[in-house]
Image (cartoon, rainbow, N blue to C red):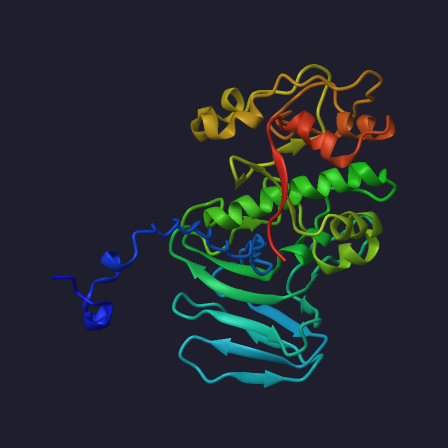
Length: 328
């Protein structure tokens, strides 16, 4: 007996039995990619401070200081004391007290009245930017007068370059000087256990402070033009050794100094670099004070005279280095 269509409850029949027409597959919609993230610029560190050993007073010797601005004297386990500009303070060091002289004005200049370091013109180079600290070193068993200041201010007081240099030479030289200083800041100092990074003699870098800065316009210009630029090897600051130089190839630091300089980290001081033709030398031979390792100043001057840029000069004498901005 046939079933009448009016007797069928279509709502109770599964859909797949109602329709035999297949549903076409849906084309997948690809996800929307996220917007590209712009590269993040490296965050540069603040300008570091360097600590320079100025001199070592004898037991019982008075250190006499003053400042061009109001200044604070801090002492271990003592209340801070403020002094007016121009007022002289006498300090007798002792082994248990660290004394710091801090100008209230960041541009204040400290004078060490008890220190004598005469320039060629009779000026006493006894004035300094930053802070003066008087501290005892258990390592050397000496008292030290230390100048703590920003590295760029320190570089302006380095007396390794005379006025009248070609700009590219001045820039190359100041990058080398900065790299040398920055290396030892990162290393915690050249002499382990001492309260300074470097001392102020030519055995490290010849530093004469603020009075030299006032009369050394080319040094100041070279520092300013290369602000924060450091020579690096394998992403580390280099020991940018330099000297006047002499005829012949530059020396290998391993043969001159041995020790760490015989490792791959210091391959940029392997020497064997020849100066350009026409170089005029102040010295005719290498010596303990004219070691001929790294940058040859006389050869670098000749390169600048021939039109080389500071970077080219540095890469010739320190092969494999890269110039980087080390801090703000």
